[in-house]
Image (cartoon, rainbow, N blue to C red; front, side):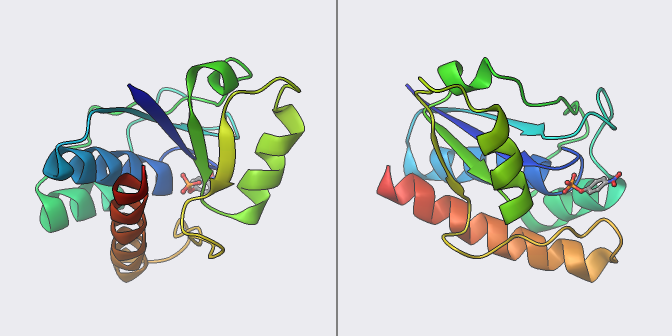
Length: 145
Ligand code: 4NP
């Protein structure tokens, strides 16, 4: 089974939405994938997603992400996952810095060359825009697997 990891900075705003959207896109396409999310930083380990992400996932896709728990990406993720998708260039370069030389994972930005901009200091409309961007990127990724 293809394994996909989605990564942002804190694993509380963007990547939990990407985890939910990727699972949802896969289920709708009848594609069996393993999906997880993580953060490059460890500030929020063990925390549930930001309440604005929880609200958007529920309102836009009827998905409850309140049980998700933030974790930090680790070197072993590069052996476990086939694809690791970063939200922005900073996430991508932080991942490259810890990527083992013999990594099996393919590393890329989630939305082609476009960053999914951090909505943490924004408002709910920024989270809605992140959801739209992430959900279409996930549909494309699942379609192209
Ligand atoms: P995320 O958003 O990377 O999408 O989870 C952030 C969450 C927390 C912080 C930054 C970004 N922070 O600085 O605490």
